Image 1: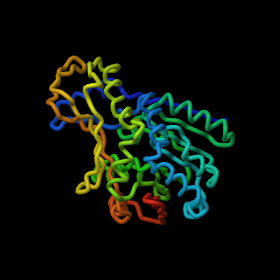
Image 2: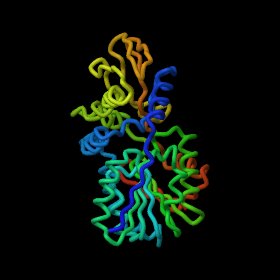
Image 3: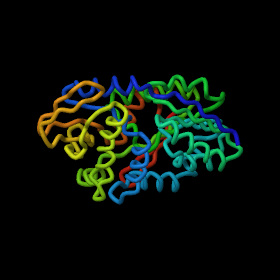
Image 4: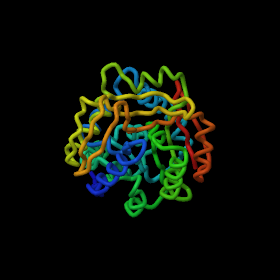
Length: 313
């Protein structure tokens, strides 16, 4: 088994700076990357199992059913790179079909990533696995020296690209273009525009898992930034904005209140929201335009039940 882990820990000052800046802004917001502490990672896995949240199941079914076509379109390669790899589950289908010699996985939650990647390395003893615990949105270029020579595929599944406004998504895809190299590919999944009622249900599951995921952000701030949020005084609120083409996720203040975070105090009015995430939905042509602006050329695409996977070169 060949396994390497390198940690690029997110500095407490980065969390502090991002959160204090976001709380001082109008409207208040916090970057969604801070959802993913250990509890947040576990809750997100539970979200993916909820009946209302079909995205993960649909993507899995699409990938399994079209895997021979995808493998043929990708062709021979040496390395798969997966930013935001989490539990390292989705990439296994590609490993079985493409047989790369190297896998490099990146995630902001370093300890869970290391554990998952080491388990994967044991299951694939002929594969060299490198896990990088990093905020790849900030440190992506630092991953380049960890990549082996040869042909690379950047794998970015799960509609994670929807968490970024179009301009920011274009910039991230351009950085992926540089990381992939001149003859590299990008395989990316994204959620398609569909019935707003289906989208609303997906982010408001009956079991309340998404609500717990959203509110866990406050628990993290209490623990890591000496904050005094009372989660019972906030309510999860998610809705589809058809004009912007995105789900918006907020925490709504249920009372006029003042909270302390890292020694600073912030006032919330009754009904004021803390914006924690947005998830853009696309038409296939809309997304190919975004990718094209980042220097990628569409090579192939597949669709199933409101989810799309596209291959770029």
